[in-house]
Length: 127
Image (cartoon, rainbow, N blue to C red; front, side, top):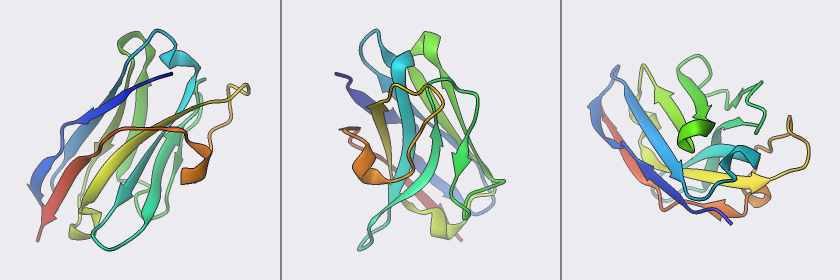
């Protein structure tokens, strides 16, 4: 099992940047595919970005492509989401998710594929 704790959220003006982090417990972090999702008030939880345990590829929602970057540091048991050129519509609670998959290059982009979730970190972008 793995426990996830997000941090780094906050308030920023449109056009600004934030980096949020997700720290995982345990010594098997490198075996997990990792994803970031977000949920705005009154809306469902949407895919943002994902990275397989191999770290050799990354996937992004169209709405954040070119602005957000997901990375992982297996030595620090941490996955990051660098968010640039933030927009008010990026305002949401951002969740980190993890799941074990035998294929090191596989990483799903839907919520039901992940069994481990953090509590979320709030990102607020003002215009």
